[in-house]
Length: 619
Image (cartoon, rainbow, N blue to C red):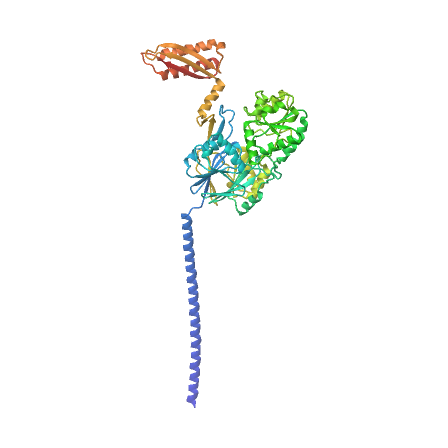
């Protein structure tokens, strides 16, 4: 019995021990599992970190191997000047050009007819250039094309009117058959190499003007061209601000914007205000002939003049070859409605009384060879100005032309004409945006980078300050110059290597053969005149056969300066005698000595330095 109790107690003790051991084994098992899970989790995190680190390294390595896409913009003209606009874009070995204009010569560029960009950089990259896009048909944007295209076979893209005006210029230069011209329409897109160019309608002082949205591998660049925001344009086509806004929402990398009127506050008035002024002014010319001077390319202005002339029963004559060509092209293409019978030839004006005539003429900038200039100085073959004339100058003088315009106005007044010009009445409005329009363009485009273009330094600087006031960081604004090149990526704008850019003078048929050295000589001739010393010397003996003779042009009048001429002749004789000895004759030494000694004599006697030209002939 006791044994049974002991056995039972032992069994209970063993069972308890077994239970405890079982619980301990279970606990140990759970602990091992948890530890294993923790170890697995830790190892997983460690592995993930290793993978992340490896992937980051791969990405960084990939970024180092693949540089960001970029686009370069080279400025070949149009900056720090008025005219000669030309911009070149380059990306991934492809290039396109925007505009190719001319500038008119400064007063000191004596004898020069036109100034065009230097095409040296185009020559260097001619095989990369895919096409030329023209924003509108003004001379400062298309005038250089004939001189470029006579040497390079590059296709040209522009709107209907722009292409029509370009055709006329190419026909003049007899190269139309060699050039490929393509018409583009607003909202149309052209793909050339890596570039896609979208045409966007804008308002300007000529129909069919465009801004260009250029999609590049680095992003979208918007070049506005010349523009204003006219809500009541003559042709009813308002600037496409909605498209610019949509591009701005998507993201515009860089904006290149017209700076011409950046110094003018407010908004540019609508072209319609000029038509309203004509309606008020024409009746004031009661009994007088109306003469209106304006830009040849301002088709909307010409249209309004014709419409008002028709309403008051007057015939219209055109004076000026460029005006006649533009009007003919615009009428042919449907941009200008000319009522039947209203236009007459300038040769027919004598058949009509003054109160039945309107003459539209070129010369609003006082150009010496223009029709209005010739009228003012009685050099026009068909029009003689007098008290029976009412002259309206419907233009603002381009900076630098104020004096020549004032000279023409003075001559017109001397001849008895009544003269109305822009500051007196609203007879002219600009085709360029003022400050509030420029700010609106900036706010819609929302560009990351900004480059003001089309203007002198004062215009570019002011436009840059406007952009800064609109929230664009100063480090993202660049004021460029001709010959500068900018490289853009999505993140930064840097200045790249400069490119060749300058000016080439066109003088008659000569292109580039007149350089700065020739211009300096012309200036010297114009300011100080010329003295020619000629002599004939026997080649073998050095004996003076004839001369020295002295000819003066633009320096002194020979008959009134006989003593000075005699002294110059004597100096030339002495030089010849001293330079010829022992039968040896150095013609170069004779010319140089003669030039130097006579120049010194003339300066000592007159304090003037004419060009001295020795002419030695040997027989």
